[in-house]
Amino acid sequence: MSNRIPLPYNPKIIELFRNPKNVGQMDDPSIVSVAGSPACGDMISLYLKIKRIDGDDVIVDATFESYGCAANIAAASILTEMIKGKKVRDAWKISWKDIADELGGLPMIKYHCSILAVGALRRAIRDYYNKIKTHPSWLPKDLTIEEKQTLEEEKMIEHLHKMREKMVK
Image (cartoon, rainbow, N blue to C red; front, side, top):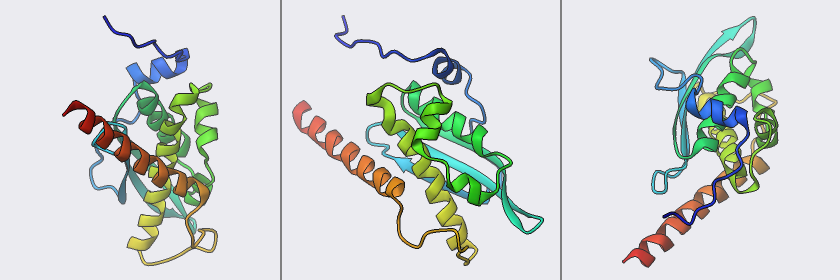
């Protein structure tokens, strides 16, 4: 018998977990980014197709692969829905709180899932502009708080995984 208490996920999170939108690899993406750690399972791979339309870079398609819990899958799914058709500079402004709010809230212990989703998005955007060797004026030169949060989450995930491995041995 499990001693785990089920998390209070709302119906929207459960629906996106059961029927995620935009899931899977993309053929010929403009950029792919990953946030999280394959060591513990909470990981998001984000695939973006970006095109220049009327002088603006626009995310014309977005898909994801997620390895993790219901909140992780739901956060990645809702992110792809939020960014499709958006100008890249507008997608950049999406925060982890925006994702959590769009999901109707997340249990506090699962906020890291929306942080990882935003981390994957911001990495993809930075990597895209590095790839095409340009730096738009709206893109900060230094890492933002959200990007630093993602790095901290990844370090914490790795640390906890290593501790768990030691305990099992």
